[in-house]
Image (cartoon, rainbow, N blue to C red; front, side):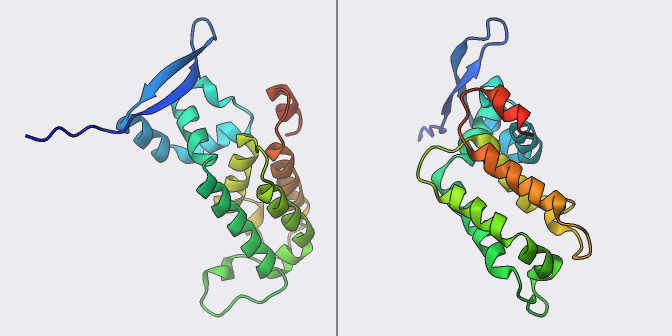
Length: 176
């Protein structure tokens, strides 16, 4: 009989009673729950909730800060920059995005892509904001070309600010 060993993630979390950081193990169920609840967890991380405040948040932060996730987010933002000012190909998934709207914020999108390309440390708050900007179909990225772009500019700027590693989480919350 073969023994199958499940992969286990080791994470740091704040203890509920003392608030001190403690080492926790998260198995397959914990990782699955973090994956299934990723949108809710990303919203919490984007709002400035510390990742160490819970096992699921810590696992989600670990996934967001992985190198391949950072590269994928940067690639998606760079694709938006390329789409700016170009009409969407017929029957393409680009059709749901307004090229005129993207063209009006192309400079901000380039700054966001540059911030994601920075080799230094990046805060998980900003990564969560970038991901939500890209995937939230009701968010400012997916609005009509006729709508003003102020909300989209603000969302991009908040993501850029959120990417910067702050000295405390209070600074990050004030920037929202």
